[in-house]
Image (cartoon, rainbow over all chains, first blue to last red):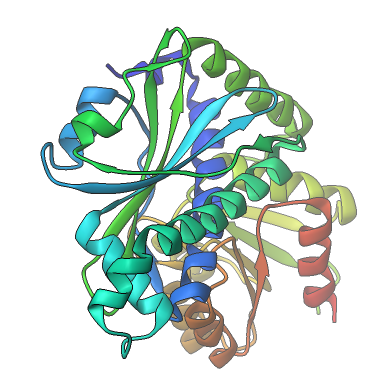
Length: 210
Length: 122
């Protein structure tokens, strides 16, 4: 499933910029937490079905996820996803390389929730600023499971669509990779589209094409 | 500074370029404002016309904003540059400062663009 065609090229561009700003803000928070650079890939937005997203994440591998429900002009479930092994590495970087692994394993869930909380909040705050709207963000929920079990097929009573910015976080000193995605239903997609157009309408002056 | 400076907005997002353009042209209607969708396009514009200022995004396909800043600085050391990015990580800020430029945090708002314009007009 790929519903990108429901958006005009300009709406798609605005959505890309919106996600870029949100995810870059989340990456800045992560880099402050782990005290190292977080590289970002160039955005390539897509709407994926839950199954397509699960396949992209490696199907049966174990993924750590922190999710927070976002509600405002539209509703979404924001999900920070890292392979479980990488999420342990992220927590190790947060706590310090000298901390023994068994201790890291003991606090992994709590620490990863904290990381997810901060990153998702930074992302939503930045998106709110661009759209000039406010969102409520629920407390974080942690899960570790295979992507097939982790990614909900529905949101409320609607079939879920995953909005994937295609921007991966990569830790500069290791190869650990993660992503932040949004789960939306059809009604939410309409709300998102309206919010995007509200902003676009403010910038109707177009410069000359190069 | 010339009386009518030329600014190039470098961003792979057309919407981002539009937003910056709208604020700049409102503040300084007599400025020449050009657009580039990539680092290569910006370099080619700089070769064709005398560019005074550049507003540069960081995360773009091809060369990133910091790489472009390095190339511009080497060839046109008097050009003033601002990195407009939400990706204000320390490692990126250090690269920008080393080139004598500044970074301003996105999102693009009236306030962040005015901050950039104040820097250009210093």
